[in-house]
Length: 359
Ligand code: GN1
Ligand code: MG
Image (cartoon, rainbow, N blue to C red; front, top):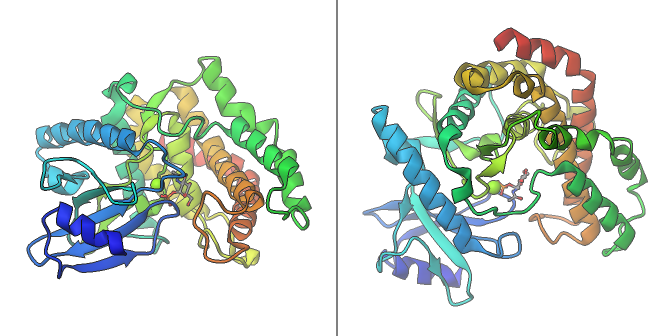
C-alpha cells in the first residue's frame, strides 16, 4: 500500500483520499480512490503477466481514442461508455512507482457495478449486446496498430502444450491427485485445434477482439440494469469472434462461481446462454460470417476447456500466474471449468439450435 501514496502524488490527489482495494480480478491490483473532488480507479499492472506494460497503455490509448470518436458520432457519452485514461500531473498516461511497477488511472463510472455472478437473463442479454456492439465497433480498427500483448493468448493448442510441459516439469510437485484432470484434457487434444485450424485455413477471419469478456468486465447501470461500459482493455488484440463470445458464456452461463468447489453446483445454464446469444447476435450478426456464427458454441466449449487447462498448468507450476487465495485454488478452478466444459459438450446441439434461431 506504501506505493499508493506515490500514486496519489503523481496524480495530484490529496493524501487524505479514501483508498479502497477492489477484490476482483486475477491479475492486476485495483484500488478505488475518492479524493473528495475526484473519483478514479487505479491499477497496478502485474509485471509477471505483462512484462511490457507500456505496450498495454499504448494499445489502450489507441483503442479508447477510436471508441470515443464512434461513441460521440452516435451521440453517446464517451466518459461513461468507454474507459477514460487519466493523466498524471506531468501529462503521462501511466506512472512508474519506486518499485518499477506501472500504474494507470481511469475515470470511475458512477452508479454502475461489475457483477461477478449473474442475477438474471435480462443482464445477460444486455451483456451480450454490449460485447456484440464492441465487436462491431472494433470491426474497422486497424489491427496492425496494436501490440500483441500476450503471444498465443487464446491459442488453445499452445495452451494444451503448455499444460503437457507443466505435467512433465511438475515444478511444484503437485502431480499426484490430478490424473483425472490430465486425462480430461488429453481426451480433447484434437478438439483443441478446431478453431485455430479454421483460422489457418482462412475459414474464420481474424478480427480485433477483447479477449477477456467475462461478465465482471462490463459495468452495468445499478438503476436501469443496462450495460454501460466494457472495461479491462488489457488484452484487446487480434483474435476470433468465438473467443469473445465463448469467454462470456464460460463466465456467465454457469450456475456457480468460477471457483465453486462443490462441483454438483456447477452446471451449464442454457437459459443464460440463450439470453446472452440473443443480445450478442442482435448487435453483431450483421458483421459475422456464417462460419463465425456456426462456431460460437465451440467458442464456448473451447474457452472453458482452455482456461481450465491454464488454471491446471498454473497449479502445477506453483501458482505463478493467477492470484490465489489458498493452495488448491487453481486446482478448484480447473475442476470447476472442466465440469462446466463437459456439461456444455452435452448441450452443443441445443446451443447450435439457439444460435440459428437468433442469427
Ligand atoms: C484473468 O484479469 P482478469 O481476472 O480479468 C485472465 C483471463 C482469464 C480470467 C479467468 C490477462 O482475467 O484470461 O479468463 O482471469 N487474464 C489474463 O477468470 O490472463
Ligand atoms: Mg483481465
